[in-house]
Amino acid sequence: MKRHLQRGMRDSAALSGLLDQHRRSALRSIHDLLRNPTAALMTLLVIGITLALPASLLSLLQVSNSVAGNQPHVPSLSMFLKPGIIDEKALTLASTLEQKREIERVELLTSADAMQEFRAYSGFGSALDALQENPLPNVLLVHLAADTDRIALENLVGELRALPVTDIIDYDQGWIERLQAIAEALRRAIQAIGIGLALAVMLIIGNTIRLEILNRKEEIEVTRLVGGSNAFIRRPFLYTGLVYGLFGALLAWLFVALLLLIVSGPLGRLAELYDAQISIALFGAQALVLLVPVGVILGLAGAWLAVSRHLAAIRPE
Image (cartoon, rainbow, N blue to C red):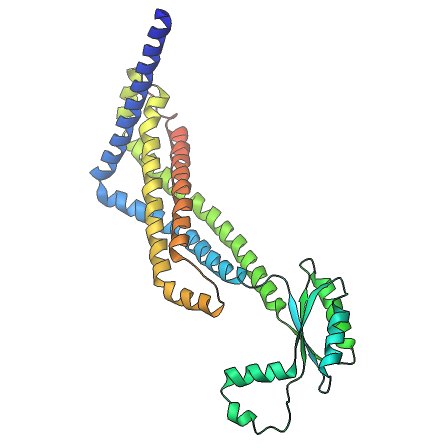
């Protein structure tokens, strides 16, 4: 029992010593940055701007996707019947079309209903009273099944256009699909740009750490002479990279939040036009959640590569 207690005390002391070393290394890294604030600030600004570019593009793309996502993904079409087709015949046709596998349901918008809506929303009520007859046709609103693909849709449109009672077939799913294809292409392009800029951030931090290693070459040699391990020598440089990555990511988030604030007005009006709800604060929070871990990982990776490459070349003479 006493042996286990002594072992536990030794483990606790070792852990406490390790944590104290990490604390000292972190404080020293921050102190070294504050010792030359101008150079540190310029490096942080470069990192922040580099990270903010792909993050801003991704945030704006997410906004556009949220607006486009509010539009119905299941295609629907409007089938305008020829003049003179009575309501009963239109209802019979609607019932027949609902038997098709590609069609989920069909709604009839009669010419009388269409005239009533037009009278209510157009503001030309008195002018419409002068018409001898209703010029608006009956319209069938065809709602397609969720699994209807492009080929099935085109075949169905061809069949409906061939019907003798059909005047015009109108469907607007094409522009939604084009918008989604453009958004996907932009997303992949932004991802490629983001990967390239992430490598650039690693190189920036790695070059900064390399200069720091060269400036402290004599100190590293003395530390090796007195028995300092590679982990002990490497630790403050890793914390320096972590600090650069963390604060660079926070600066990038500030830039992204400022951009979203600037464009919040036009984006809000765009969302209203498409009956969508967007939250600029939500996209800003998502950018923060994305940037902070990415910045920390890039900072540590850049510092680790620089230390691994240049630290091995420093040997006490």
